[in-house]
Amino acid sequence: MSGKNKPLCDLSNYLLIFILLCGSLFISSCNQQGRGFALPAGDIEEGKATYKRLDCNTCHSISEIEWKGGSDSLKIHLGGEVPKEKSYGDLVTSVINPSHKIAQSYKQKTTTERGLSKMKNYNEVMTVQELIDLVTFLQTEYKVTIPSTDYYPYY
Image (tube, rainbow, N blue to C red):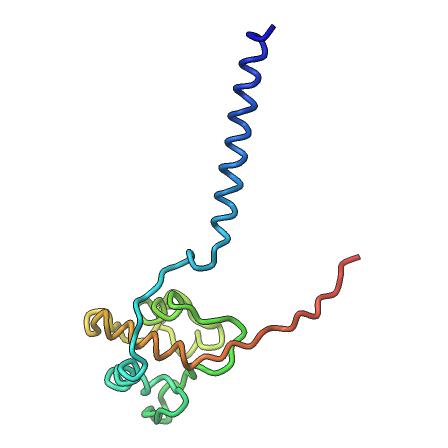
């Protein structure tokens, strides 16, 4: 009798181990720190200098930095209040691959006929440290607003 129950016990043990493993993977995936990637500490002032040196203020406006664009230039505002936090990944992607995500309100003015961003490619001009500093500087310019939590129940 015990010989017949052994395969059933082995199966239930494997099933229990599988469920525990899946549960622990699910719980570990909820760790916000593990998402994306983290850059080493950058220097805000060096990032501000990089922003100016690369003439980002020809097309982008940001608080406390004089805008250099003309009347025919784009004036895309960076920083200020936004409903979603700008992560390192968001900002790095915006610099190294500006065609990845273009706001609908800017698409007509900022894209080529092929739908690509008109932003200059800085990947071969900027060092990794300059990118880190620039992202550190840009991240300080954003103020995250907490969206309303007035949710109404569904009936």
